[in-house]
Length: 157
Image 1: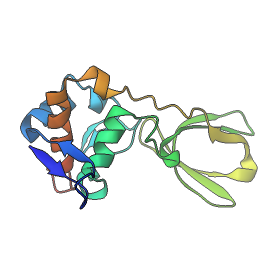
Image 2 (image 1 turned 180 degrees about the horizontal axis):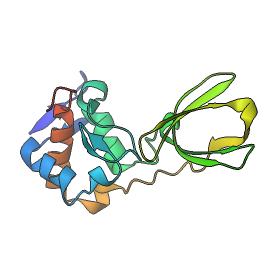
Image 3 (image 1 turned 60 degrees about the vertical axis):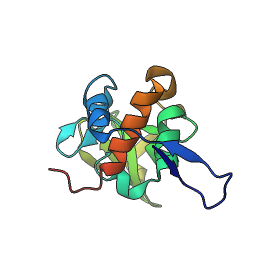
């Protein structure tokens, strides 16, 4: 099935597949839960996908799967903070203001840091650690995965 995503005849389209098979890709061969969470399953290394179908368009989801570095949002870049005492915290920046930065570490813990207590806090990479699934999955499996991700709206058990 093709889903048109633009009102113009020349707009982008995304091929969709079977959400059930897409869930199997996410939980199996895609190894998505190695880094991402859906509900209470998975890891905290990458962004939580529990509501991605509500917050992202089909085109944006497919683009993230095919070109993760090109579509990576700055907020999702891996960050390393080093406190004045030498403690190293790695994770993703959730929020930042003039005086503090909040990170979610790789174990899912929220860490709030006062900037004056830090030696350094910066993105350690502008390259996504996520593989490019356009090369890893067949076109059918990619269409299935996009379809499943579109069903994720936060109401899953």
